[in-house]
Length: 388
Ligand code: LLP
Image (cartoon, rainbow, N blue to C red; front, side, top):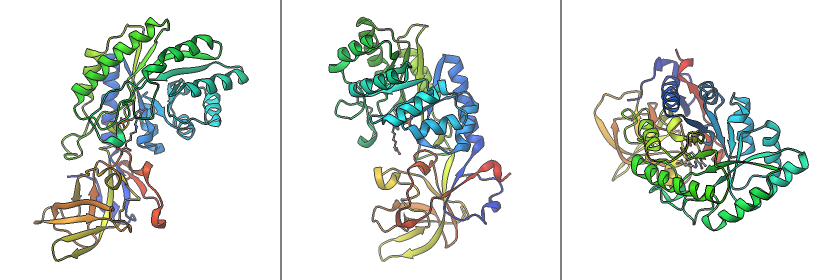
């Protein structure tokens, strides 16, 4: 069960709100830092998963870099303590102003996703009299065996440069060495990968081949970035509190062929922040139907869209009166959409109006994807260390 110290202090806070266990976040980030040092692999936190300034400051203080997908994220990362040289910027649709802002901030690398983008970055760098650091995001055409909306490494996905354009990209880099400082290759095949060893082994083998192909074309690959994707245990949030970073780092160390002068990078997002966050909500009504009972919460799909958008599972528990007899409910939100359902036929402690309910593993892709649909305000954030 979710353990909240001084839970009484929560009673005056308006629900719904996001609750962040800062000790768990610290434990997770410290583990990554230790594994990074052991294996010489540099981790960049994918800040799209959660860009809360307090969370970013804790992560940057541990020396991780940042992986960003908009100019706004680049700015936020720089404001929250990430060294500019440790910020990388990916995304298929970078605008001119986002490119200019990132050059001014002095980011470490643009992960370029197409040839037209390479041309635009080169011409902006030329006009400004600077050299832009670039890596090519490669589409390796491998299946990550995850949800189709979060699979990114197949040729039919919009991401990255595919094999048929490798030669053209290399020719362009060679002929624009004055404006483009070529750093290496970047990959990302998908998210919420749970078959960690097999899927990342496959990625490492494919990446090793692609790196060799590029070097055979006469460019030096200094950085190899394998992207994010490490999954978490949504069903048992208390068992798998810290994601399986050991297997991820171990698999890369074992299967990625690289020279000592090549720096390996990863970009985990979800695995760093998901388990430290819960969406805390109150039971508004218990509504008995003829066939089933509904537990109607004051948190809705506008606060956390994953169940409605991806059919995603989040563990739900009553944290006010967890020990009584259990009951089965369809747990739903208040939003006027039939997809505003937290979970059907869920067994949890018998619940009453006013009880607090935790929707677990909500620290990643929760608050950042929230909206004001139905004019509902954004849920606030509460941090465990504020309750001590
Ligand atoms: N690097 C790149 C280039 C990415 O596109 C992503 C995620 C990551 C790193 C971080 O991946 P992670 O370690 O978090 O799996 N909203 C969806 C997830 C979208 C992921 C998009 N890209 C969800 O709620 O499941």
